[in-house]
Each structure stands twice: as C-alpha cells, then as structure tokens.
Length: 224
Image 1 (cartoon, one colour):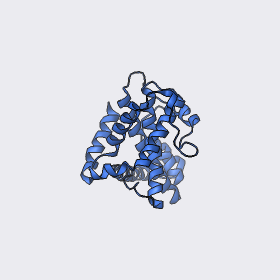
Image 2 (cartoon, helix red, strand yellow):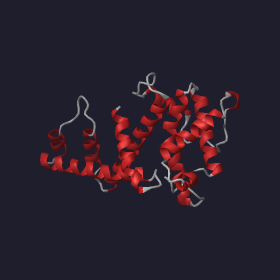
Image 3 (cartoon, helix red, strand yellow):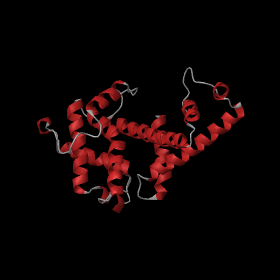
Image 4 (tube, one colour):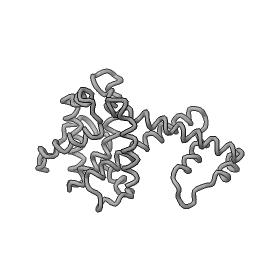
C-alpha cells in the first residue's frame, strides 16, 4: 500500500485499494466519536481527499512508519480541525468509494459490541477484520482462476468454528474426494492464506522487519 505514491497507473490503483482497505476502519472510528452516518461519511471522504492532496503518504516511507498507526493519528488530527458539523467536508470527487447505504448495511450486520469499544479499539478491530477479508478474497480469486471454486467455497467454512459447520468428511463426500485429500487441501489452503496475509501486511509497512510485529498485533487485536 505504500506504493500508493506518485501519479502512475500503478500508484492510482494502489491509492484506490488503500482507500477501500482503510475506509471501514476509519469510518468506524469517526462514528464512535459521535458523528451520524452522513457526517461520518463526509469526514472520512474529506480525510482521504486531504491525504491525497497533500501527498502525506510519502511521510510514512520517509519516517519508516506503519500505515495503520499513521492513518489513525492523522485522522484524529483531521477531526480536531473539523469539529463543526456544518462544515462537513465534501472535497472528494465523484461518488464516495463506499456508498452510505453499504456503510449502514455493514453497521446493521456488525457483531462488534460497539457500545463497549473505544474509538481506537473499533478502528483496530475493523482494520484487522478488513485485512483478513482482503486476504480471503485474494485466496478465493486464486482458487477460482485455477478452476477450484467449489473446493474453496467449502474449505473456507472451516476457518471459523461455527454451529452447523461441515466436517471434512462431509465435504469429501460432497466433492467426491477422500477425507485425507480434503485434509491435505485444507492444509495447503491455510499455508497459502498465511503467505498472502504476510504479503498484505508488508504493503502497509515501510520496513520489512515490521511485518512480524504487525502480524502479532493483528492477532492480539482479534483475541482481545
């Protein structure tokens, strides 16, 4: 994500990915500050617009920082200067990257105990969950490109233990595989998932050595 600098096509694509990746976590932080959905959407949109206008992402690389921490501190500073709702920021061009309807739908389906989490915790948790969603999406795209969509769609259900979760034996019977083959396929899926997770985290840090620290932080966020 730190490749999102400059104005090349690759940089523009990286910028759009950055905005979509961090929109939900940052929007959640703003909402927890007491802003309504529309005001929070305006502030989040304005924050990203300011970020791009000023080229602030260069600072992250220069200071060898972590994008997760940098964006949260920057957002706090931005909000402190935009406290008056009447001045709702609408500097973004075109439609917002994430429509208000989608934001409200995600809030309605949110399982987080928002009333007990601090703004910082909401941001951290949504950052972690969004990152995991991106990794799962990339993994699914790889399996679909290889013609293994049915296998992926069933194996991904094994990632989280939930009531009614299919067993490996059931998946084997459904897909015409042996149980051992399903076990090995799930092992490969998890290995690839770990690789992609580290790749995604590497995109958000300026120093490769920070990847493991960020990974440990992500695990800690999800466990607390």
